[in-house]
Image (cartoon, rainbow, N blue to C red):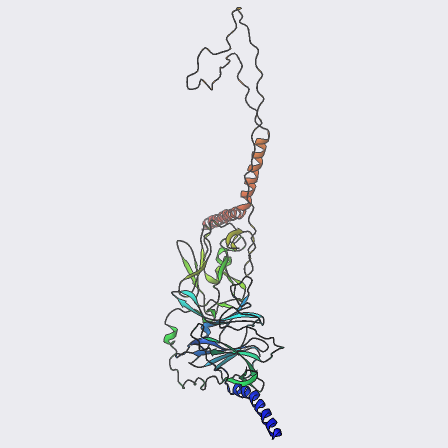
Length: 501
């Protein structure tokens, strides 16, 4: 009997130990539950990175390329020294419930309607990822911030975000997915740690109380987009969507606007105004910029414009000079301005208004300021080499002449008394305190001797001015002489023809 009693106690103790584990194993993993909109659904930060987004709304997204991913290398994107990178989502439509999978290493599509390469990198130590929608409003480019997530390998002060991200060596299959925390306090949606199942990369598994529990299975959308029905095009007329009005090229959405950086209004000989004047534009983006539908405009009172043809591209991070022989635009030598307009007619860049343009000098932008430069740099970074100017020279104050010696008093020839040294006329009351008596017997003071340096310096300055004027207007003089010779030759030919008649 005692033996059976001991066996019963052992079984009872074992049951108490197994009961919590059995209860824990029965608990399901948190369900996948994203918020509404185009949202981040799943995320793998270390190792083979991927980002999955879902259209969790009741309307289709007609143009997914209007959305961009902005990635920062810090939990706080506004911190000092933070760097960022961007990626535009693929050009496609996305129906409600469909997903987009961006993967660094490719692999299984997991039922996503759209898959593409993940071109940005997620910093393992910490970062910030945001979905941004780009559009146009009254001719201006707008950016609307959407869903976002931040993460850190340590603590994360942002509520509902990811903290304690393990390294790739510690958890090579580590991933995260969206859950509804079921709390009334914001944010109600958070992130749950999981592991990509080694046998099925579309399956996420969650460890609950030390037990691995199947998590969400990435079924994606159950129906892929249907194919368009067959049709026959009879007319070559453009569709109404192509004639509705101006539109920004799709590739430009979300890019920085190009800038006018250099003008050459008055090329030096042998170049000519009709062929070699140019307007240079700079593209600061890491991808080419499409100028289709954009307009160059010159002038301040009389305005002329040039419309860029379809397919005109600015190189990535580069300059491109458009010459007068190509655009037909003429920059005034007596003052003007150039402007760049987007397809809607809004000015997105313009030069400062310049004054009279000298031969061969460029009107160039550097550090936010426009300068005249004797060095022209079409299709390259500007070099400011300002023209020589004659500075006014200070001649100085002439040397003061020495005071004349006091003349000795003279005696009257008739032996009369000495002439009084003071004037017999009293000064007026208004100047009595400041005027001194005048000795009429003293000779007038000698004129002050001008410094001998003064005329020499003036002559030098004058010579420099003449030489500089000859240098500046050398081309004008040469052209004038050429015209005189040509006119004389024309008159000579005319006289010869008249004599022959």
